[in-house]
Length: 250
Image (tube, rainbow, N blue to C red; front, side, top):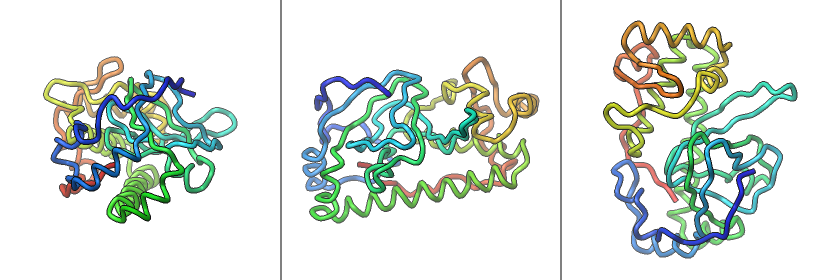
């Protein structure tokens, strides 16, 4: 598990950098005041740390402020399936808070900064701020929608289509939260992470990514992937892209 230091409110909710991004809906002054009370602090997690463990019961909820992570499930023999990737604005730990047990684990891909909320305050959020309660419901529905698309990909898309979908999906998400700019690599992940997401062997994954490179759609180097033609990747995957509507965050 990631080590936790004393929680401090280093960044006030009123000056949260995520509020400046167009991809997130604007909070009202009343909502910002409520979140300032709800938030208990922040903590930093290093790359490769485990934030939450399948079967655990965490007393906290978290909103990602900076960095990359991923959700995954494992089999007893160590094989794992990456379910989704985590980026700024994502809420994690809700499952454990409502169901008393996490059904998946969460690991960091890069150094991360997370805002921390006490699980015991969740009921008061729904009671005192229905608009924020609706936001949590929206975020849960959006996660379900993304998992629907991932399941379609693993179940029915070809290997090339799966890889094209995953890379274009992550490219769009990263760009919207300021984690991707021109000449910046997409994400600090390895081909093993791609393999565990696509449900392919490492050898098959390597061959598939080489095909995308040969078409000059991506450039893969070590632990970095540069996206060269996002639109063409979307065409290969048969994916229309993420909706443009601003999304909520806590």
